[in-house]
Image (tube, rainbow, N blue to C red):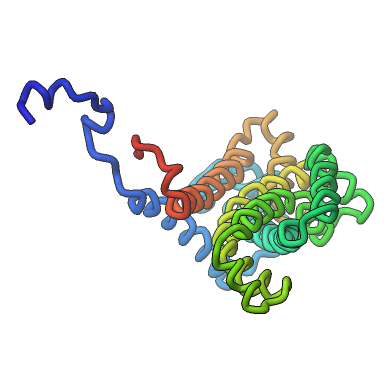
Length: 294
């Protein structure tokens, strides 16, 4: 190709300026943040014996300093230590609720796609009915019925977040049912349950794991919202939602650090989980990756 033809060829301005960065580099900050948060939530409670009921009014409402990196709250409790405990609770709730939601959604989606017919229509109408109600509103109703507690929050999130997994699994199962290897298994004498457990579910497992990972940040924010509204953990417990709720009163006296610290940690942690999930999604679906990767 001549130099003139090369110059006339259409090129993207961003890709021409610099080659796209490898998705692996996007994992570095996200994995680093998750590693630090994971180690902190495991090691700090073993090293520091934090009594959540401890009150020291002599050091109450102190701004960030060398002694208290994130300052203290209105009762003199160290905000950093409470944030670590709160993140451990939030991540535990998010992971457990995401796993339960994935199991329920996978079971519903796999049965709907494998059986088909009227059974599929009934299950999908059930999914549409649950999806028509806002997640937070339905979660509040469930927690109010069960009474606010950690178990009630997990059940609430699990019962309102299985819809995505169900739709993904059903779509994948319907797509796989038309593949030649499924016809070969049926001709070979495999029963419907054997086809489902040996061929369909193993092939949809990566998509289910991806959906579960993407669900964790949503579940964490859902738990934070319920705790903020007073429907989550008890008020004295270390929870991101409780800490932000308590910090509202402190803002009137200039205690900005009490809400800034838990809010930033929540945003950074959930963005890190979303970053890892995004790279994984691009690997599973390379066609969805745009040309202007950054």
